[in-house]
Amino acid sequence: MFPFDEKFESDHRQPLFTFSIPSALVQALVGTGTYYDIDGQSADNVEFGFLAPSLSFWIQMPALMGVQVVVCSTIAAIMHKFIVKKRGSTTAYLVGYAFVVPCVCWFPFYAIELLDIRNKCFRMNLCFTPLLVIFRCLAAMHGTSPPVVETTFNNYCLYNTSVIELEFDEKSGKPVKATYNDVVGPAKEFIKLLCLLGVLYSIVEITGYAPFGTVEKTGEGMTWVFHPKHLANNFFVACK
Image (cartoon, rainbow, N blue to C red):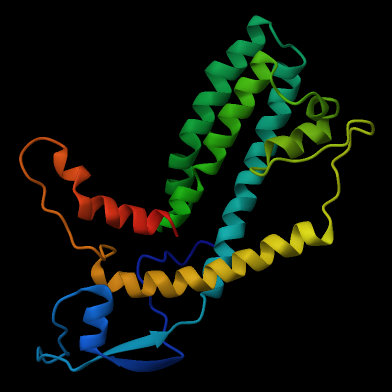
């Protein structure tokens, strides 16, 4: 199956198990209104289900990142030859501003159409390429890249394909190898946050991601944006 065949426009997973919580308790916790069963009658209990992670989703995500790494590597080769090695020349600025920047700005739209990406998370993921490459390109044109990354072509490609800041040995000019703790520590933190946020957002989803209530837009101004409920909802999601 082609990696991007599944579109993830809706969640079709079946729960591994379900459990019920009294609706009065749920209302007290998340402040929502009355719950109804499939017959439209007021429900005494709210049923929750435990969903396993989607394997297909976690295959598509790194596949999409892999596509972008290839694109970034290709552009890095062009930048190294025509910008880094010709810094300060007309050619360097023309390649940067007239070719690299427009191409990477156009890339997400092209990739969405080509791969038929419909999931919002994957679409947001495609912003990685223009954000990374534009800043790397500006640094290459104006000479603000870390000195070590431009010493070899391999270093420069690695630098241009990583959203994580890399550490290079100033003497050898090679990337410093990550230690066991450098790898395992963040991995543990990621799994912990994945589980916690999965539970949190599953509960908050009941409220439409507005646990403090929604705010009606009033008038033509933007004052409603600063309503305490609106700010509280955004802060609640952002702080997690």
